Figure 1 (tube, rainbow, N blue to C red):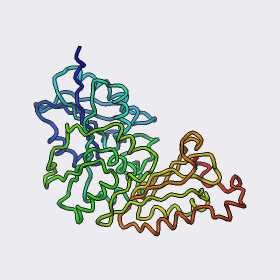
Figure 2: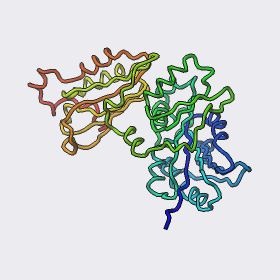
Figure 3: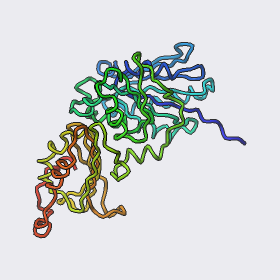
Figure 4: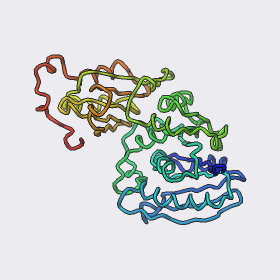
Length: 357
């Protein structure tokens, strides 16, 4: 018996719903149904509104309630039954799902892959603003400060969201490219953040210059590997137009107090960095390193003994106007010296990250 055909699904993400509109319109043809989820009513009424339409016009509309818990989790829980209903009708050959501006593709894709075998995630497309991209990747403004948080627990910043949306995208649509001072630099920056992505310029009306949906580009294993925790040589891209990616490694642990004091210097001119580090006062623990804009965060990843890796520090950092030698010197100065390695009681070192790890 032949296997049931899976319905291809294109995921549309991006911070600006205005810039996404002409891209969405370009995706919808006679065989496509679109589901658009909006978060304009979330701050005031605590709901995410949704609408369904195809080329003939509106089909349905409604809202999902969001409480004080994880808004993204509640969205996924409410959204999947709606998608299942649409796919079961077998009226369309393609689904486009436009997520709320603050939604990251990764958690939604994981849910689709795990629970909807009748759907094939086909393409993840992200719309970015050429005029604001560097600013959005470089600041420390919280989503909550812009009224874009997906519920009270959402403490992400704009830079973190923008970076994660780009990093998971098969296609990045560069809107407002005609207004950007250095569009080639933005192409390089997007490729450094995600070499898997194809960058497509939008014209003056916002319509993409090429096809941006139903391309069959999505590779779940590759997307997950790129969004994962480990920094490797494969993340290095050729420098160009002022965009540089640096790989920093050390077999020595970091002094926690010196690292804490150096955080602002480390993230200067860095739009995105990720990796795994080894803190001297936590000798058995793998520590996740991540920064976006001016914000850096650390988290636990288990024990070194649970992996095939010896304890070490590995960080990949991408920036515009970044001085690699300066960054490497700052990080090197945070390491334990040879003398400290031999004489210090590592466990007794001050722990400035006690409230985080």
